[in-house]
Image 1: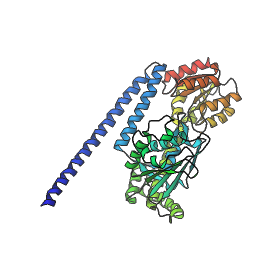
Image 2: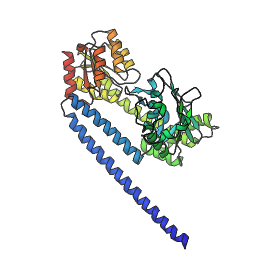
Image 3: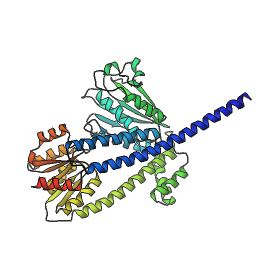
Image 4: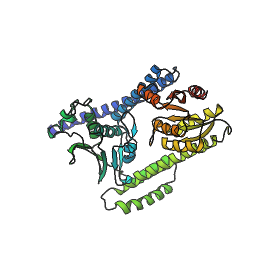
Length: 434
């Protein structure tokens, strides 16, 4: 009777928890939906504001707020997606300059094979990695490297971020994960003490673990362990891929069979779940093929646009987003310009400038491989009279504007702030051309 009585009470508790979970999830869905609509309306209103320093600053801060809300909702509801951990890490932009991790002079990223490192996680996990990596850069000498190392441990993945900084005393290694706590050795450096507390909460929610270790070479090793992606039913997974990518089940199985042969040769004795590796790598391959197909259609259109206005003045478009090119090119053609070419990074922009010698370059400032400012400097070496429109979300940033003044003559450039209206782009082009 005692056991039955308490079992009934426990069932009531479970039912209440289940109801609470449903209410919370419903509330989050409503919040996510309504917040998205609200921000969409705000962004639409901002586009119509006159371009001023205040308007540009407001746009920047609202974008930051939108990203924070999206990340918070993602953390609470924790929608998960299968990610390549290698791709996630490589896509991180670091520090205020937003330097791509792959181009950061102090970062060394080591891993054996991309095939081994897939996780099923919320997008907020990327912020965990960004926080820890930026801490490693921040609390170590600017002349030293930070090493990121991935290792597959059967059902888990270990991520180690290693620096040669000031280190953390043993008695403080657990305390730094407490809310607002700051290590004694780091109090002279600006910080809130919240970062590692947030990081630990997110990692724990992932079913992972984080530890601080001493680097034998001096400094700290942050060791993060997170479950590798696991699939429970490969057959069901194949049917999901069939539906998502419009393939026949035979096509999916054929691609999977080829991948399985490759993976078996390399990892059959590694003690990892081969089915999960096959599915994750097949999903990754199909995603890549889908993006290539979409980009291929865009490139066909963009190359067709290059044939318009053959005898007109020419513009070289430089931006790491293919769709920015797709947005700008038709507008400029309507105004009578010829598109001389498209570059997705600064290095390609310099090479292409040598070949096509355009009358004007519209160039994004923040890009991988080589920034817009660095590329423009190299172009000026080729042609001191080259003209630029620098495209950036930080159009009113004093540090940026001062840097442009130091490097370029006033008559050689203008700045346009993203996101910009069509008429603003045309007006800026006409101004620099006069």
